[in-house]
Structures are given as C-alpha cells and as structure tokens.
Length: 340
Image 1: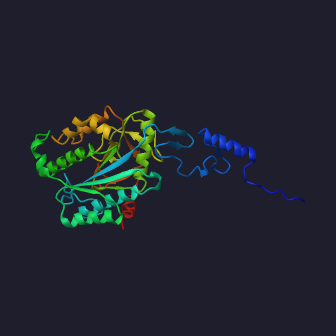
Image 2: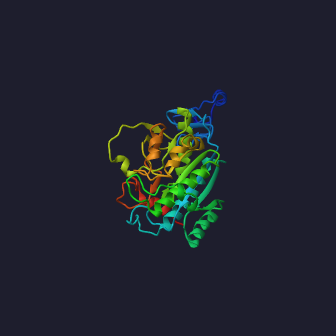
Image 3: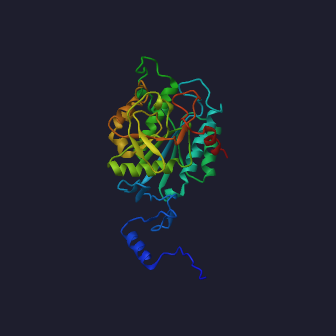
C-alpha cells in the first residue's frame, strides 16, 4: 500500500496569495491551526503594532491615526503621611514607604514590556517631606531597573499663597491637603514640558505587569476610532458600583473598558488635554472642592474618560474604603508580584 504523507507546507499558489495579501495589508487566518499565515503568528499572540495598527479578533484591524510619541510618568510621593484624609490602616498594614516602593517597582516592571518597542518612557518623582532614608530607597529601585528619573523636591511655599484656606464645605484646609494641592500643581507644570501622554500617579497604586501596555495600546486604538483625545483611569474603583448608571463599553487591547464620570487623581491623558482644560485642572490646586476631584468630573462631562474591567491598578487603601481595592482581583497576588 502506498503511503500518503500529509504536508503542512503551503502550495505555490498559496504562497503567491499570501504575498499579495500581505502587500495589500490583509491578514489571512488559517482557522484549522489558528495561524495567521501573513505574519507567521498565532491568533493568541500579540498582533497589534504600536503606532501602526490595533488588531482584536474577530473584529479585525483598526488603523492607528493617533500615534503615541512618548509617555511621561509623574509620581507624587509623600512617605511621611500614611493617609491624606483618614487615620485607618491600609491593607497589609505596612509603612507608607512600602506602598510607594511597590508602586514605583510595578510601574518600572510594566514599562519593560517588549511590545512597547522604542517608546520613550520618562519618570519623574515629585516628593514632599520624605526622609533621606526613604528617598534613598526610592533611588535604589530606579537603580535596580537601571532607569534614570528626575527627582523634584516640592517647595510648598511657591503655591501656598494661591490656595484658599477654607474649603467648599466651610472647613479649614489641612496642612496635608495644602501640600497635596501644591504637589498636584507642580505635576501639572511638569506636564506642560512633556511631549505627548502624561500619567499622573499617586504613590499607593500597585500596577499589574501588563498595565502600561494595555493603557498605551488602548489609547491609540480608541483615540484613532473617535478622532479625539481621551482620559484613562487604570483603577476599577468600588464606588463606581455604588449606583446604577447607563454607560458605554469599549474594546481595548486585551481588556474591556467602560465610560465613567468620576476618578480620583491618578489618570492618564495627553498634553493637549491638559492645555485645553488648564483652568479646570489648576482650579483643583487652588480650592478644595467637594468632592476634591470635582474639576476633573466637570471635564468628563465633555470628554471621554474610561476605566478597565477588571482593574489594571489597585489603590491600596483600607480594605473597607469605597475608593480603594477593586472588585474581582486577587489583591494578594498583585502585591506579591511587586516584591523583590
């Protein structure tokens, strides 16, 4: 009996067809083995190309018209204050520096994703009143990752005269809140020097390894689709589920995202957006509103703000805080992944 050998090698005509399809920009999928024959990849691999195209099967390709040029990560630190407005302990009950170090390490780890290619990612740390020992600990993390960063020691006196001493509730603004408002103001001034995207981060947000990749690729995809700048909040806050609201759903790189109307002060957006709503952002640094982030929420009435489901970053506050730990996430696992 004659043996019949099966061959997976493409025929001559198939090779020609693949070449033509590749030149025309089409992707051909062999649904028998999940291979994308035009790019020698499997469908479960990363298919998108930064600044070029976003691919999500089976919806196909989105041409990127809004290319991300650079990302500046501005981290606001204050290791001398455990909680800004609460006396409760955080989950795991560690010293504040521990959460700061894990925040920075998680971001550095996330920035090393190969799919981000040659994207310029810059780090700035704006610190208020941390001890030399804690600043040395922060420095050691950047040295561990062999990543340069700019440290700015906050001078509250430059901003204090522009801050109203009575808040919108008629209460005296605390010294901790004044320094926080000054730090936000300094970060906004730094944002004006940036090239493109800015990620404003508080020092108690621990990120998943895929966080920055998901945020950058989703920004390009969505901004290209709607032809507009957007705001991304990396945390899926518990308080977002406290009331039933009509929303919109969006497909990111590997996560689902939904439209939201409120965030805290950790978010990613563009320099264009900061310049467009400069007065709104700065007003948050001059008067303590109720809620504090009200100027941000006013922007979200005009511009699209989205957050991921499930969360990409966890806000490590008290376990009972509605502004803290995101639902349906293994908090302990995320925490342990940022250990040495």
